[in-house]
Every structure is written in structure tokens, then in C-alpha cells.
Length: 152
Image 1 (tube, rainbow, N blue to C red):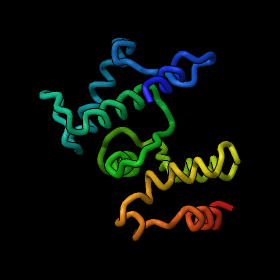
Image 2 (image 1 turned 60 degrees about the vertical axis):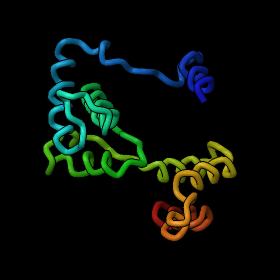
Image 3 (image 1 turned 30 degrees about the horizontal axis):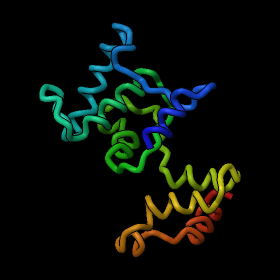
Image 4 (image 1 turned 120 degrees about the horizontal axis):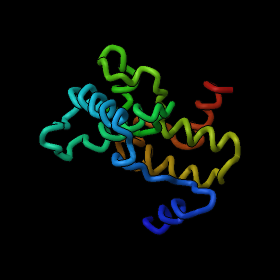
């Protein structure tokens, strides 16, 4: 996996970019701190302790907010709540759009960007692996049919 990611980082054109806090300007660093404070109160992340719980989500959302990225794609219910309830929670993430991975999988399948077989494997891994998931989520074919009825 690391080789795959490194290949995307080193490709030309770059297909993946790693962002670092140290690249932020002074003003952006101040905004970053403000976003961290606003977001972290709704998570288990404690800024002063820099604990691991929810750190990745909080810092990533704060960085993306400073850089004004329009969308966040995730399979994380907490991140979804922080974005979709941004106004109510006062997180400052009001303009973010949230994309679920299943929406991306459907889009890629619909546009035939990747093999349906590969997308089906990803779907199964993310949404249909455990007994509980199989009892609550549709299988791949049902998923595609339901999404088609929603979006087409």
C-alpha cells in the first residue's frame, strides 16, 4: 500500500499530494487554530493534550476549511455530522459538501471509470463485510439499482 501511495505522490502529474501544517502562512495558521477549537469541542480530541482520539478528523477538517476545499469524502459518521450540522454546531464548516464513499462508488460505476468488479469489491469491503452489514445494507446489485432510482 505504501508503495502505491508513494507512486501517486511521485507521479507526473502528481495524483496525490501530502499537505503539512508547516506550509500554512501566519494568517492561515491562526485560522487553522480557530477551526480546531471550534471543531474539537464536538469530538474527543483535546487540543491541549494533542491526544490521538479524533485528532486526524479534527486536524484534517480544520486544514481543509482553511484551504477552502469544497468537499470531504468519508465513511465516518462523526465527520458527516460535523459538516451537515455545521451551522447548528458552529464548526465553521457550513460551506463544505459531504460525499459518502458509496456515492463515489456509484458515480465511478455509472461513468464506467473503473471496472464494476473492482468497485464491487470495494463496496463489499466497506459496506457488506460483516453479518451486521449484510443484514442492513443491500448487496452490490441492489445497491446499484437503488442508487440508479435515486439519481437517474
